[in-house]
Image (cartoon, rainbow, N blue to C red; front, side):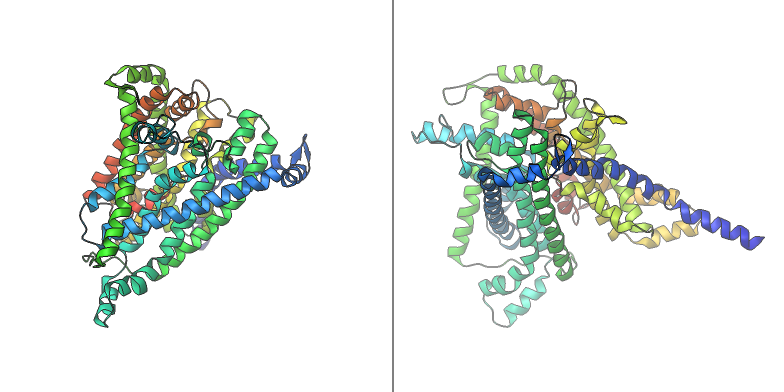
Length: 560
């Protein structure tokens, strides 16, 4: 009897550990796999019947190959330039003693609080037909609505990601390896070329792939600055919003998703390669590399131009928001801000509500998921990790269309409700919470948890009293960054919002689209201030030394 009782108890505990994983599996299947499958299903339908007709028609159009070529070429160019800039800035900030390094670092991460469509607006202020730089200062009347403008603005936006990723790798390089090369007679340039740069290679490759994915998925910058130029993301937006051709839009997004999925697979491999050769960070001071004078001048010139451009973009938004008419009348006025507050009050309140709820849910869900994956042994752990990470690789337009198609009929009729907007903002941030939580839990000493269990505490008590307090900074940074990302989100929700669920980012997008430049600038300032408040919180936590090792990794988990 005793053995039978013990066997029954063991069996019950064996199945109890599957309760939370199964619950998360169900939620992830409903809100990730189901919408994804629905997009591919609709791409394979013609007038309600399954067919390859959409793909045949699409590949039969010369225009499709032009769009595919344009998307890939611009994304590759943006990836190359952004990665090069990120590398140079990371090296200058972390491996030299050149002046103004903190300013360059600040200017580089400013785009994290400036959405791409806001940067496009500022670019028009500065370099448009009546731009401050091109027309007012230089007397030029340039046409900026072309692909080079898209490349410039996207490089400004995505260099921050490349900088953070390369910096995370650069910080982990052991300076003793570089010293060994010096002792063997290598010059400073040879040390960098033969030691530092090869060790940075996996980070550089990962950064280039990540930026490529982001550029492929971006559509706001292309719509505002591309003119006749079009990409897969912008073409899918036009097909859905302009022509209301859901099947064609789904087909464009299916192709885009496949490209991004392949890129994400390469990104994961590059990250894994980097982790294999990376030395553990010991806290020792990093030794600078004494580059030659011409190289220092070159580095300073490149990053000075980049920093000035970033700060000009930021300043022009505020200038347009608080002057009567940028380019003609620079007298101060609060009229645009008053108009923005009246017009965007509902969007601002919705944004605060959705961003706050998303921040709370993502931070708590992320640490629970991380605990399940790192602390509980069960079959299907790898699949759960993959499902929770998937939104990181899904373009915003794809998941937006997927939610429209998946949740517009019973039993999950969510279209037009606040639930669908909340669901998409939370799902988009789940990889952020998971990766931040996993990073922290993997660094914690499990002996403390074992001691808690030895004293009779169950797993729930140990989680609440041990895990949560130790992971407090990670949870807070996750919440703050989820808040910032939700404030800036556009790609996924633009297809889902209704007048009652409109967010501030959509108000800005619509104002720019309608040519209401000053109002758009004022709304943008409100967005920037909300984003800056969240990023300031992250910075203060990092400065306290509570999040030094994993905060940069968390910042990179920004959904497309």
